[in-house]
Image 1 (tube, rainbow, N blue to C red):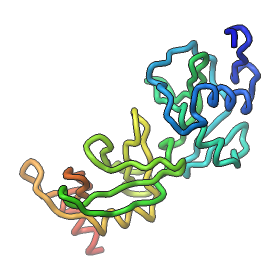
Image 2 (tube, rainbow, N blue to C red; image 1 turned 60 degrees about the vertical axis):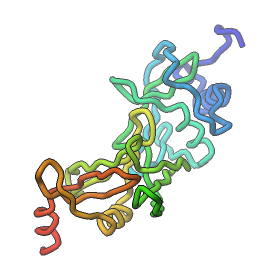
Image 3 (cartoon, rainbow, N blue to C red; image 1 turned 180 degrees about the vertical axis):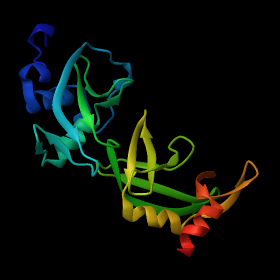
Image 4 (cartoon, one colour; image 1 turned 90 degrees about the vertical axis):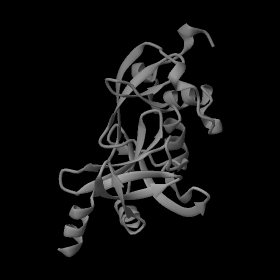
Length: 205
């Protein structure tokens, strides 16, 4: 298709125009396109938002087709200024309330590295929590500690609250830089959650 014939979603192609561009880029096959290699012109922001619970909205209305959400997730990228949906010919900004993905299932196993945890996201990506996909904990404004897992290329999943309690159950105390820390081990790595003394104080309340 010639460059001048391509319709930008930001310029009026809308949701279906953007979906067609994503399919053309290869996202429909669930094989992640090389979005890190693409640097098209920025076409402006579109009225698309990912809520903290993982729901995608377009023009204020939830996108009710999981396959479409999964398709868009394959062309999502985090640039220094904003989150964008990117194809070889266009780049549009979207709003993300918290993390772009939501962790909805945890699997726990064992191998020669010890405990191994795998996380499934709301867009059906599976990642092993390891050195390349680390787990971190951040203090929320009102929810207490919030766990995040790096899915790929600066894109994180917020682990839903019910799974946070599983992480606590599977946690242990280790000495890190001379201080006892409570955290979670997976695939030979240890991911500190908080000082062990603080966790003991929480448990005593």
